Image (cartoon, rainbow, N blue to C red; front, top):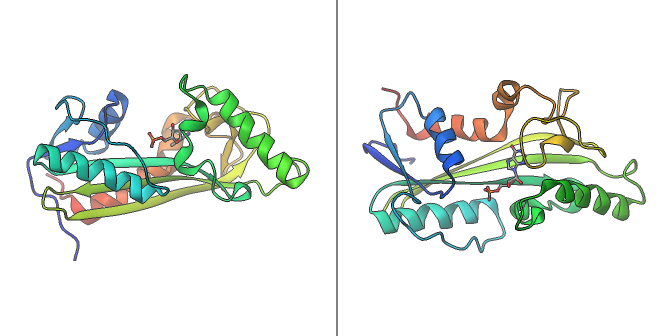
Length: 206
Ligand code: IMP
């Protein structure tokens, strides 16, 4: 049986101010005060699992245990079918310490071309994945996972978005996420879908 969120305060298990702002917008209609793990001075746990669920769990439970409050964590990335799901949970790591996604996108394209003989012949199916874990200090958690499926293109296109957006064309569209208007991307993104699932399961609007 799933548990609903009824507390007045929620820790967002991130040290990233952008993510906190994004969650504030997504939970705008709900009567909850958000505070980040960074603001509470909580340590950042190591993401040692090989799955999105595993890493979201590590982050949410660490923050819930340390703060004594319910905590929400997300883990996301891009999984390429032709690379057996890579870069997956290592999506951010492929960009290196400088968080440069030019070389990371080039690596995806190069590895597909190497494996299949050429990029044109490669399995270009990919999906962005977003996993959310809402954990309570007593150890209970609720987990949701959503995907945004699409196809990869060889040459990056478009100035919008971030990460791997310029080489990803979502199914049913002709533009990459990098070319799309941000509102259009948000309407179909993996993160929006995961939030919708979590809200339906756990949150009651004001
Ligand atoms: P996280 O902060 O560990 O969840 O890292 C997620 C990584 O996945 C990001 O650094 C991006 O590389 C990639 N990623 C996740 N969502 C998106 C998206 O919507 N567009 C492009 N890249 C994404």
